[in-house]
Image (cartoon, rainbow, N blue to C red; front, side, top):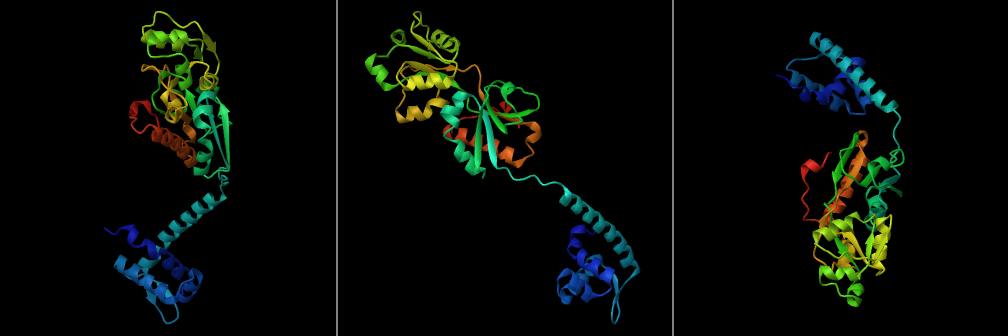
Length: 309
């Protein structure tokens, strides 16, 4: 069987010679030398196994098989031209000039903000925008390309992938434990607890530690970033995941005085609209965010069932 790929390279030369009737005229139209056009016709006839032209003194005349082949290839060429015209006439989407990401204020302040300019550079955009949204229901997709939410799937019409699983443990400044030792769970009663919620997470942690005497000094914030900054200022202990606190633990600005962690009730997910995942810009932005999280947690193994891409 003769495969089309064997004759495709020679169709332009064949069509031009058949239409114009002269090798030189075809060569001029195709911006080739006459010998190059003649060679392509020869190679086409060799591939077909039969002549398609009758060589006359001043022109080239199609054989019977050549005329049939010309009709068929002409239809193919016209269809190709119409397709190309259709593509060329479509409005071209301008290249992206900005990256718009939504995230919770805590994740945005502690983890995302230092990385946002680098993400914009990798995506070759001149502007990066941050919008606050803790859950998918709070995301305004008309203003956002990608969201990193503290929420649990599924979400209709969305594609998502999880960031590292969160485990919460108490963190504080080294100076805090120097002033008031914190070697045992029971010594927590001498310290102030910093809350990002109404106290549920600390209650779960205290239950896991089997504490009978729960600290009486507390400070409540409606933002994780506020509780975290209060801990950095030495005001007390905040319950924070290693995912967010790792940089500060590594630098020594914060310490984990008690070796007990609990799983967070939710997880961070990178989310995009499913209909926009065909856009290479969105797909690459999502993968870059995941790569950033993996680079800081190289030992992380994600469950494929947690991911929907």
